[in-house]
Image 1 (tube, rainbow, N blue to C red):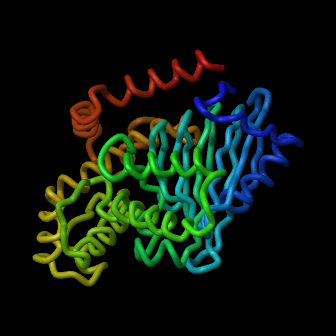
Image 2 (image 1 turned 120 degrees about the vertical axis):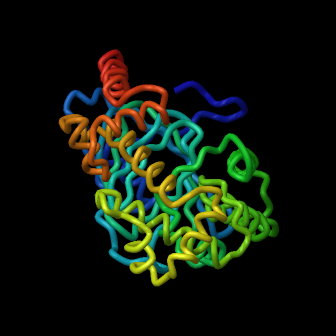
Length: 323
């Protein structure tokens, strides 16, 4: 691994994948990993430091592997929450809510529910493990924000990324008397980054922000329902239809457009997921709520600049060239 500018080399982790599991347990939460067949040689490097109540770690791993967290089935003080910055490579997360992270993405990870993770190529991440009560004070129900990647190249997310990197680079010179203020500043930036969501909403009311997160969570978990509409969402969340529409309007979108966007994004992720390689494009389209394959292809092409078949062929060619 090439040295990062201004950084000393990370320390090699002994004992292969088992050693890496031990490092991940400290930096994230307990996970079990396995190498994929023909996954190549596995190598990992890591380093961690304590900044007040937070643990910041930088991890590098090569080789194709998969694993996961079995989950605790609840939120609370005993659950691990990790802010993860993907510095190189990317990962696939699949569970109650699925996502694909790429270079430059920030994502909150939660061990409250079981999830699986795949790394297909060498990758490096900067992770900050935060006590659940501190994060909850800033973000409310953190599970509403988990596994929703946010690009860190603009806005509050860019400031959060730079502060994480700066804290890491200056870790040896940070005085204990300043750690409380630093952690609070990071928590404030996490709230500013994730509460409004990647939709860049203009919602100013905290109550409406929280309801918007509930709406988004419900939509993400019911994309396969082709009849997903205002009536069912409002009834499930205990909102009136008029208030539901007002919240979505404040987020600079319409309910129909929002649901469509989430379906298209989920379809793109499924086309990329290692576990979905054997699924047909039509099966993926129907699984996220589309009922007409041509309509799906047209909408997908308009959103991502290429049809689903072309994207899958491109991903397949990339994977073969790297194998």
